[in-house]
Every structure is written in structure tokens, then in C-alpha cells.
Length: 109
Length: 278
Image 1 (cartoon, each protein chain N blue to C red):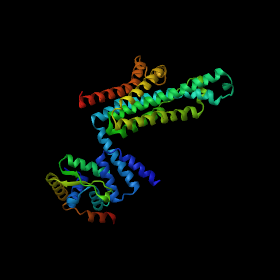
Image 2: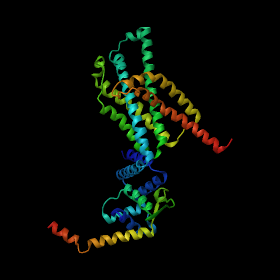
Image 3: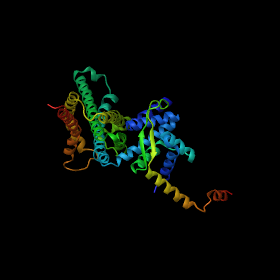
């Protein structure tokens, strides 16, 4: 079973498609969670997912806007897609019938 | 201030492997990351990478069987050296008299004391550099962890272990300068700094060129033989465990980094000969 950060990373990579690389994934996760995403968490999780065979990464060509430095590009593998789908199903099933927004409003009032 | 923080970011980036360094720096440039966040990011990534490396058997083995024991050893030797220096400094600085320079015998004694102190400082520096070089070349991927651990043990040994001074030297050690400042300064300047320099060199190149290694080995051997008497005194004094073979073990331990230097140089020459052929 994936961890939630691993899922976020897979989801961001899948959404970005061919434009999935470190900085873009990081920006995507920060936009989705409204919380900072550290480079340490990002790159160590990418390594872990790659070791599990859930993603593939490779170095792209250097670009001028990055000071001539390459991107670490990411592609979600078929196994990664299956694992992410399973995680999403589990969260959706566990959340069925639960209205977090309704509960939050009740608790706050 | 910002320039200093960016310099620190760049220094920390050197702890990452070359590909990851480029990727992380590229990300920071692209996202225009503020320096404070860049510092946190790189430090966090470096800590995680070093922690991952520490889980490997080689890095753990080096940390616990080489870094910590050698740092403890050099800390104890520097403690003994600092005590001697404090007493000498008390005699000559706090009780200075121009009469010392007036008599030929006084001048000779002063010259001998200065030379002895310089040789002691040189010995500490050479031992520390060689220890650092050995540590750096054995475990390059955990250079940062090893450097921090070495510095912490050297300084921590001084702070954690109560000092014992012979009652006859009480006058010298009443002063904070001789009791605290001088030993800490000796550890920082003549142990930690040369050791970190040695680690940096060792992490970049596992062996020195033959001429440099030979010169260093001869200097280190002469200084170590010369210092064997005070190593023996240091091994018998202080908080050292009471164990009959202990002084011998300490004497052997100060030779270990020197033997590593010679061994690594010989090994590299042999490997080159095999690769290039007769």
C-alpha cells in the first residue's frame, strides 16, 4: 500500500504527463495540499518509488532557465498506475458516507 | 548576509552526488527559491541522504569503529597536550621576567620550550589530518556525518569528562584561560580543522601521490616517534581505562592512520602498474 505522500507524487506526475519533473511536481503538490513540499521529501520519495518500480526517472537536457542544469524527468509505470488506483479506491471506499465538510462545520459551530 | 547563506547552500550542495546537485540547483533557480528555503531544502535533503547512507554496513562500521574511537583518542591526546601547554604558558606568560632573556641559559630554555610546543602542535595537526584522510577515503558518501561526529566527539569529550589537574598546578588552572579557553582552542585549531581538511582531501582522492605521501609519512613518523613518550604518559593518566595493554594499544592506534596513508599509496601504485602494464 502506498503512503499518502507517495500517492500525491504519483498523482502529480500523472497529471503533468511529459512535463513531470522535480520542480513542476513540487509546485503541483504544494498547490494541491496548500503546504510546503521539501526537496528532501520529494527526491527521497522519488528514489523509493523508482526502487519499487512505480516510476521511471531520467535526466533531461540542460535548459537556460535552469542555469544550464538538467531536469529529473518522471514517468509513472503501469505498476505505479495500478498501485495509485488501488490507493485511490481504498480512500474512496473508506470515505463513503462520511462528509468531512459537514463534520467540520458542526465541530466549528 | 544573503551572500553568506548562498555560500552555505553551495557548500552543502557539495555533499550531494553530482547529478542530484545539478538537478536540485536547477529546480531552485527555476522556482526562484528564496535563500532561507533553499538552505532548509538542501540541508534537509543532505540529512536524509546521509541517514540513508548510514544504514549501509560500511558507513556504520566506519562511524563506530573508526571515527568515534579515533576522535576520542585524539581528544584525549590533545587534553594531555593542552595541560602541558597551559603549565608552560603559565610559567612564561603569567610569570614573565626579562631576566629570562638576559641569561644565555634562560634563552636556551625558552627556545627549547617554543620548539617543543611547536612540535607538539605539529604532531596534533599531522595526526588529525591523517585520521581525517583515512576516514574520508574509507567512507566518502558519509563525509558530512563523519565530519560532524568527529568534531562532536572531540569537543564533547572535553565538555563531558571532568578535568583532573595535579594539585601542584592549581595556580595555573585557576584561570579560565588555561582551564577552558586554551584546551578548546587547541582542539578546534589543531585537531578539528586539520581533521576536516584531511577528510575533504580523503573524500576527493583516496591516495596521495607518492612524493607527497613519502614526505608526509616521514614527517609523521618522526613526530610520532618523538611524541611516543607523552603518548605513553597520556595513556596512563586521565580517565583512561585501567588495562595493562592499554598504553600499547594507544601507541599502536596513533600509527594506524600513517600506515593507511602508506598502504593506500602503495596500493594505488600497484593498481596503476597493473593497468598500464610493465
